[in-house]
Image 1 (cartoon, rainbow, N blue to C red):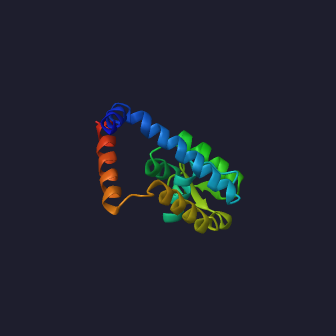
Image 2: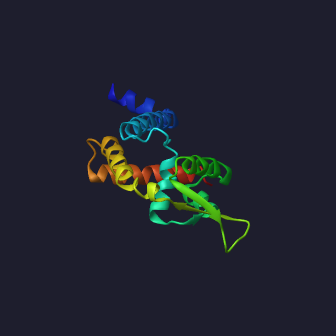
Image 3: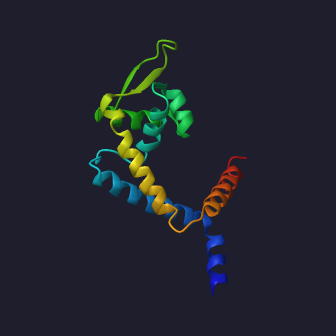
Length: 149
């Protein structure tokens, strides 16, 4: 019986990954709402995390860092601007570009987003050993590379 479950899983791995993504997004949205961040979407997390590491950052750098196209990042950043979490300014080095920076309100999010990230990972890895985590990461990165050929 267990062998059949493994066979089913191996044939439907992309569906399983998609299901995990959907479940984790629902979980993350609940965490955001429970922490008073109802205006934020799960996709804002990558932008905020990147800006917590390096702020300011050009839109082009930000798009490359989070692996999304510039138009998608622009829409996400505009929503963060509406929430007063970030600001956009002209790039003084490249007049065609825009620089994104965290506002004081955006900087205040770091402890909360760190805790939310910890809660998400603790739930995802519940029952995993450190070796399990490393092996899962290794295999998923290997699979990701298959689609980047």
